[in-house]
Amino acid sequence: MQHHKNVLLVSKTSRLHERMRELSHSLDISVLLSTPDTFDQAISSGHDFDLVLLDLAGLSSETINKVDAYVAGNSGIPRLFSVDEEQLPSLRMPVQGRSDLILATASEAEFEVRLALLLWPGEETVPSDFVTIDNMTINLATYQVTIDGEPVDLTLMEYSLLSFLATHPSRAYSREALLHRVWGFEYCGGTRTVDVHIRRVRSKVGPQVASHIVTVRGVGYLFKL
Image 1 (cartoon, rainbow, N blue to C red):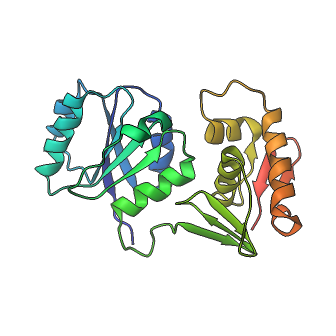
Image 2: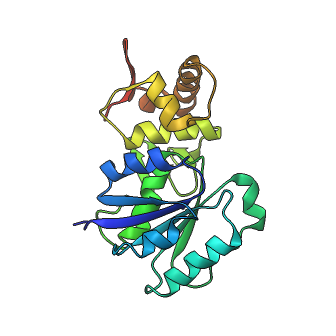
Image 3: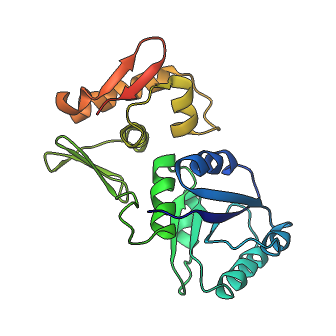
């Protein structure tokens, strides 16, 4: 059984705030939001944190060093680093302690898995990296999809859309909600993009899996188990 956990988000921007609010509903976590200026206040607030999530965009080395010192002084609590793709070549992960990284543009489903694996290691209730439905397997850790053991050539957005729907089954999502949850706040295109990607995903995964992706008239789409 999962036990409630406290997460500290250290971020110079607010781009992950809404995502963490959503995850606080799907995972048994409380999230305290802090900026580099309020980090000292956050760690002296009396809360015991079980994980620090750092959004590295714009964070100074001074702030990162402060976080390192806090983690080292608190039994090496795990860290999850949220990074932009262009930061990957220069990223150096800590040698000490448990840590992981995730792209800031990753789907909420992947954020949920990576947070859970750090917060509840080894517990049976931790979401698996693998989602299997009929003859399809989604590997959430490697962004790969196979049908009957054969890889399916999906773009990143096609994969993100499919994995989000498959990990949130039996609930209808509007096109606007899917744009918000899969493409993110910064996307400026119209809702027709969702229809185009749904059509491409259905054609690539084949009729057996495609039958799970149901069009809900007047609403949007639902993944039926």
